[in-house]
Image (cartoon, rainbow, N blue to C red; front, top):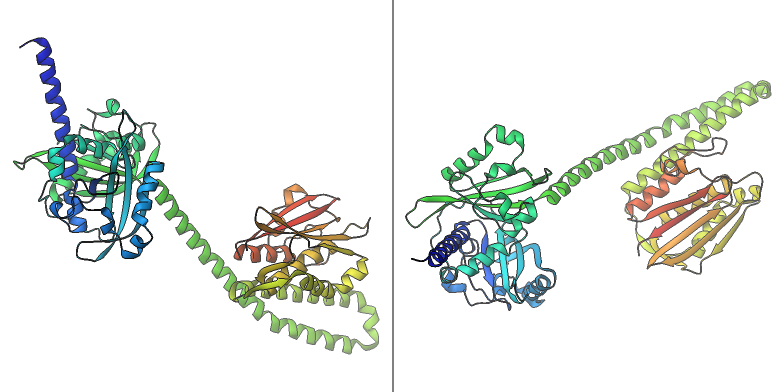
Length: 509
């Protein structure tokens, strides 16, 4: 045999062996439905995982449209066609939703569709589709009972199927755990190119502490013992960074039932893990806030009776003093002011708990009428400070909001603008509405004392008062922000010391 023929024969044998590995890799996966669709959505191949999850045998489904896996309401809105269109435009499509088995029962599925294109021409060859049954994680004990006829006839399709999946790392290990195949998804997730990792032990993907306790050997032994091994935990990329992974290892046997290696599917769940951790933290924060609200609610109500008693005793004290009343006027005035301040704090705390516990009906509020009402409540303050309240409601004069809460917001912002005025000039408060990018913006500006940059966030805290000589409880802006946070809206502040402040409220409608 010539050298050329010998080289060609060796290359052919190597290609055949690689294709066998790809075929066995797909056949060996039992927990994922992995199959090919034509460019128009007709089933071209079918693996044992697809049969186990969906209930169809290959001869029952190959050649039929994949829309029959979807509920009627999904088909009515052409959801299957939308999935293929999205995958064609963006390379892949992933979602979770209800799917239908052969017997008509529903299961909750994670679905990944990836467009497969010719490396030479870019022509769309079809789609790979990976489906995972998330309704039941029980182990699937039955071995693969059928090999997909289409995969037997086309080794190239099996290779395209595996290589075309970019969101899952799918690769083969030999019986000792050495990497012997590598797909695009594995490169994307782990960072290694095929030539960098094939021939190395898969322990390279594990943290040092896991390798010290021989965790990879444990995984393979459990996979052999139970038929599969699934786990979630930290894994290591080529650059040393870690990610949270879902790992499925399945033993692969040849036709003589001899172990030839393991298939390994890895999914990067870092974002999902991050979201779950965030949800847990938010849940704990919600619990703490609820406990705090309950405490404030109880305290504000329990303090009313002692304050009423103090007011009664104070009246008796003034009566008993009789002619000596003038001698103690300064002390009595301080006591009276302190009780009035405590009463104001209790009222503000009651408002705070009301925000959390009351159902506030959203209605269309006329801003002109609302501001008339607010200015009427502040008539004495406006008059005593010789303040000017100027309105420009040309942006909008109607707002869908809780009337009670909107009144509280405007009352606090306008009264603060007047109370924190500069002694050097007449207080001027400007109220303006405008539309910004489809959002409703209400602006309250003043020419008062202003706020230093370092205090801009602190002023929205409970009982925070920057100017102690100004009468107040330090609850107004806290209440305003709490109301807006609860309704999904926000407040921003622009301010300059001794120049004035502008509060902008952004409402969703």
